Image 1 (cartoon, one colour):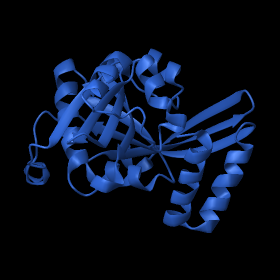
Image 2 (image 1 turned 90 degrees about the horizontal axis):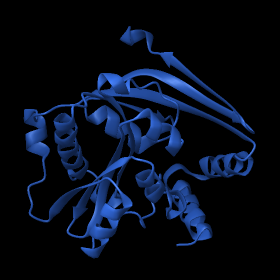
Image 3 (image 1 turned 45 degrees about the vertical axis):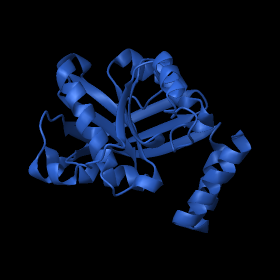
Image 4 (image 1 turned 180 degrees about the vertical axis):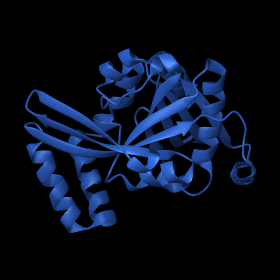
Amino acid sequence: MTNLKILWTRAREIRQEDGLIKLFRSISLFMISPIYIRNSFYLYEYHVKNRLSPNEVMRKPVTNDIVFKIVTSNQDADKLELEHYKFRSYHTDFNNGLTTYSRWLDKGAIAFCTFARNDFAAITWVISSRYSQDRIGAPPLKVDYADHEAFSRGAWVNPKYRNQGLYLFTKINRDQYLTNVGIRLLRTTIHTTNKMGLVLQRKFESREYGKAQLTRILFWRSWRETPDNRSI
């Protein structure tokens, strides 16, 4: 898919989901983005669990057609594609230009993917070091990697499979992996306009602990975190 087609598809999605006013605002922000960006985020933390709650057991999909994969490199992704499990070439809110997923893998992020048969159904990413966080260009969120924390990013569910328990299935398997490698807490940033991201955080026991604002003017960048007074 060309960049022009990707932009057209995204514009159509915004028009259908949020209306013309949001579309015009998004176009305006896109036009000035090389010079000026100002983004606001909610900050969430999630305590990694090594077992399911009764509610999660009830919602877990039970089918032989669901496949979970952990991908730590582009070499892993190449092998999966030979088995017809593709995700790097799939347009999502995060896979801009269909190059972001390949770049994230190159820079040390881990992808947790779920497929329905061979259909790409859900994904979430984990950044487990400051080195990877900086190289990826993720928001400069304060994460204590030395204290078994990590940065969760890029959660997405194929619209075809939303509300079917597939993200929960992905999260359950991700948490098992994270428990095995000693990660106990995930932190993440959710853009204030990311409706699906906010739904996922609030639905699966994450706690909002503050807000942050990222401002960039040409090469100058500022990041400011504000704790939620209710969490103190």
